Length: 337
Image (tube, rainbow, N blue to C red; front, side, top):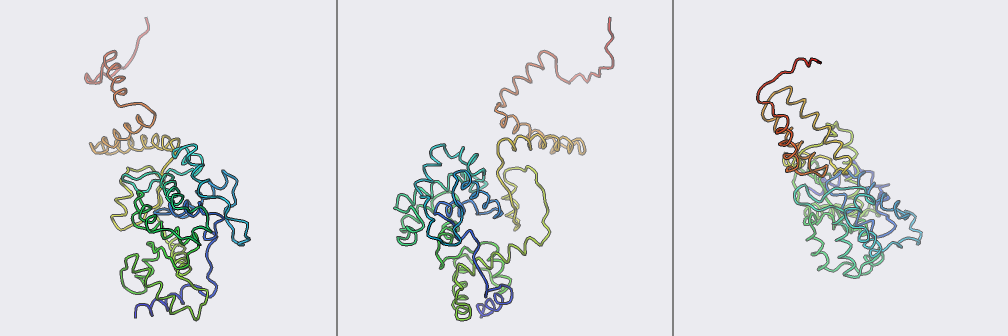
């Protein structure tokens, strides 16, 4: 019965007769599928599109092959690995991907490193191109190794990788898809249950919509919900926050969009944060706001390449030469002789 409700909902809200995949499902070469699958988890998708574009632009590569003209699939997994390893993960994140996002806010690795590890596993199992993944498939042992990469345990990236590389039977039921299913069936689904119900829905609708696949239905739902979400008012911040704030927001049942800053932007926003925390302390005169100011000061010290020990030495030296502020002295005038 729930599938019947879902079929009706899909027909009434999604334009199934003319449904089509986005260009990202027609990447020119397999490495872009890895980059997209790894970088897209937990962030606004436009930022992921920028990462793939940055990679292709840096190396002068064609990004999409929407016409399926037979001239694609030339950039191999080995070439991707060579590009990243030749300059290192940190520098690749900085100048090639131009993205410093991590797989998790706690103990996560750079997504650039996760993408490299993903590619290394594919190479280990003889997968170099889109044609390879289509004709050979990926061994179960390879899948298990990919799931051991930090941030990949849920399998969402792996399922999405399969979708991007052409597997019509795959789905990646993210929060958008799960919300759509709950709204129209009144039921909470696990990701596997969601995939099963999408398969059942396609089975019931395929006579009416011959081109409908699980992959296309998953994308159509995601696209509908993502655009609907844009119409809702979201509170904008654009401010530097403490490391665990995204985790706290998500634990409260909300979604947030964040990014990892470059070193240059990080220092710039830390300096702004100093002014912000000082203003908040001046307004409240509270110990809590003073602790925030101290936290930012310590972060500035580290970001600029100093140590807290060096800061204390400079402070102690000035105190020894000029004293502290304990005597409450107010200087009024200096008279010239």
